[in-house]
Image 1 (cartoon, rainbow, N blue to C red):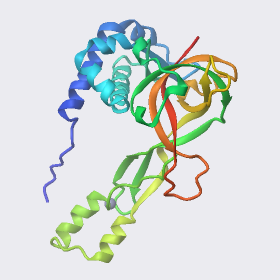
Image 2 (cartoon, protein in one colour; image 1 turned 135 degrees about the vertical axis):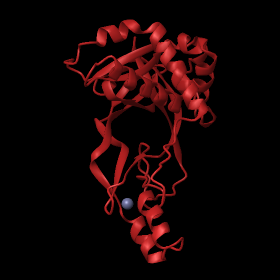
Image 3 (cartoon, helix red, strand yellow; image 1 turned 120 degrees about the vertical axis):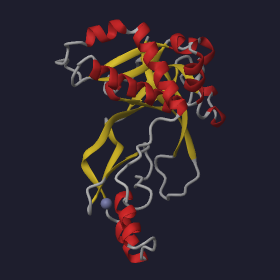
Image 4 (cartoon, rainbow, N blue to C red; image 1 turned 90 degrees about the vertical axis):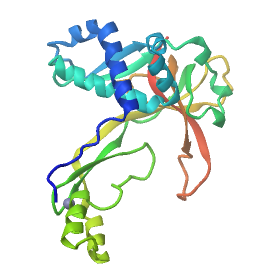
Length: 276
Ligand SMILES: [Zn+2]
C-alpha cells in the first residue's frame, strides 16, 4: 500500500469564499485585529466580530453564497478568522462573525413567517417573551478508532439524533482490504464498523439558548423560538427589545414522543442580535 495520503482540500467554491472573506477582513477590519493583538487576557474568550452586511453584499461572490448558503458561508468566515487570529498571534480568543445592519428588504414580522421562508435570511424587531435555560449541544463529535487511533470529527445538528461516522474506520478498512485481498469477511467488517468510539475529550460543545419572541406591536401575536449561541447566551431578559438577524429553520416539535413525528415548528437561528 502506498504511504501517500490524499487530504481533500477545499472545493473551488470554498477556496474562493475563503479568499473573499480574507480580503474583506483585511481591507475593512485591520483595526479589529490591531485591537485584538496582545489582548489575550480578555474576560470573555469570544470576540464578537461585527461585519456590516453592506460590505458582504458589495462583494458579488460573498453576496451570492451568503444569501444562498448562509450557514456554510458563515462557517467559512469563522475558519478564516481562526487562521487570521493565529497569524496575529492572538491566543485564546475565538472570533465569531456577526453580520449586522441588514437591508430593510430583509425585515420581516414574526407573524408573517411561514414554512416556505425556510432557509431564508430575515431581520426581525422583536420583544423577548421568555428566556430558556442555558444549554450545551454537541456541535462536533470526535470519534476515535479503538484499533488504530484514527480520528474522525462528525458535525452535529441541534436537537437531532447524534450522527456517527459513515461506515467503518477508513484506515482499518484500507488495511483490511489489503490483508484480505479485497474480500473482507462480514464479521470482521462489523467489528471495524463498531471500532469508532465517541470521545468526550476533543468533542466540541457549544452554548446555546432559546428565546421566545414575538412582534413588538402585537401583544396577542404568537411567539416563536429563536436560537442564540456563544456570547449571546444569558445576555437577554424578558421584555428586551432586540433585532434578531438569522436564518429561518424548521425543527421537530419539542415534545415529540415518537422519532418519525412529522410535525414541525418554525424557528430562527440567529447569526447576530442587535440591542435596540
Ligand atoms: Zn482504525
